[in-house]
Amino acid sequence: MVTQVAYNQNQVIEIAKAMLEAKPVHITDEFPLLTSGGRNDYYSNGDYWWPNPGTEDGLPYICLDGQTNPENFAAHRNALRRMRFAVTHLAAAYRMTGDSCYADYAIRWLREFFLDEETRMLPHLRYAQAIPGVSAGRGIGIIDTLHLIDLPMAMTILRERMDERVWEGLQQWFRDYLNWMNTHPNGIEEREWHNNHSVTWFAQAASFAGFTGDQEMLSFCRERYKKVLLPGQMAEDGSFPHELSRTKPYNYSCFVLDNMTAICLFASMPEEDLWEFSLADGRGLKKGLEFILPFLQDKSKWPYRPDQEHDEDWPVAMPFMLFAGLYFQDSEYLSLWESLEKYPGSEEVRRNISIRCPYLFLDGKDDNTYELLRL
Image 1 (cartoon, helix red, strand yellow):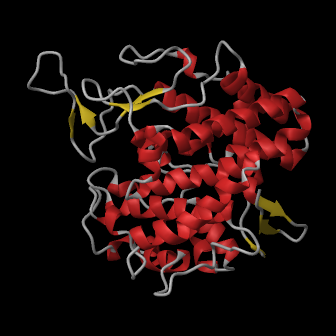
Image 2 (image 1 turned 90 degrees about the vertical axis):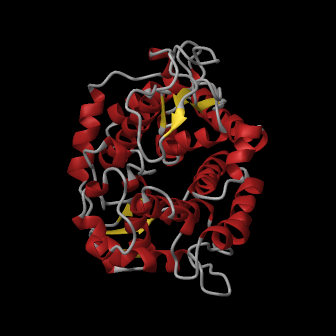
């Protein structure tokens, strides 16, 4: 599928140049005082959990849904996301320019973050989204590694510059992590969750399985998309009731559709194309896109309650607009992508965009047209 789309290569290259001046980050740079794990274990707190005003030590924390606690430990999450942002833009700049300096520095970031003994992150999330005084880590925390799903494409682009041991080490890391996601009680809990959390589990699983060659997992992702995610989460009008009932219905509706699209991008194959799949009553990705489109074009038409926080910051350009526009040859989605902010200033908004460098997935042609790539 090929169509016209704006492709600001200069912006991507300028970001990559800035990343060349940045020092690689690691989760070992900061150690959380409340973790039950070690220095190489990822740790984060649940977003909406706050100190208990009724106790002297603030424990156990209490939930204020939709209200993000800015004092929670987020250093590991921020390091992971900053690493991903740097690596993906460096890889994109390498493909655009052929300049090996971008590739070699991206590989250094990857090696230090995932492989070097002193600084590596271990391939599990046992202590993710912990709640002080309540839980050492929860299945819901696996959503934190959603921000790794564009790394496999970046690493594939970088492979020709990698030492074979680095390539094999990165594949093994993601193989180990995917196995943990699918076998540990926290991973299983997240996989079976009823709302966007299970969708993001499968977006991750599909991306990591494609990178590691796990055809069995890819088949499982396709099956669950068709038999569980669509029938269990999408209404007949294309909306997502579990998201509409939350305190941020607009944000979450965009977020879950973005990740449904990511599953289609990563798990589809010619003989089993999830982009085109629909249930007997018409529910499928197209139906979800049709539901949200009018409210992206004119948010004032949104008939549900506004988001509790950051409502004024939406909508922004999200990868599903670009990918759906390219796949379905739909100018309305491409126009949205081109007109909306691609690098939003709000931290809350940025963490709800799973793929931050969608240009990795575009194959540029000589006539300024682009084709959607697949792993």
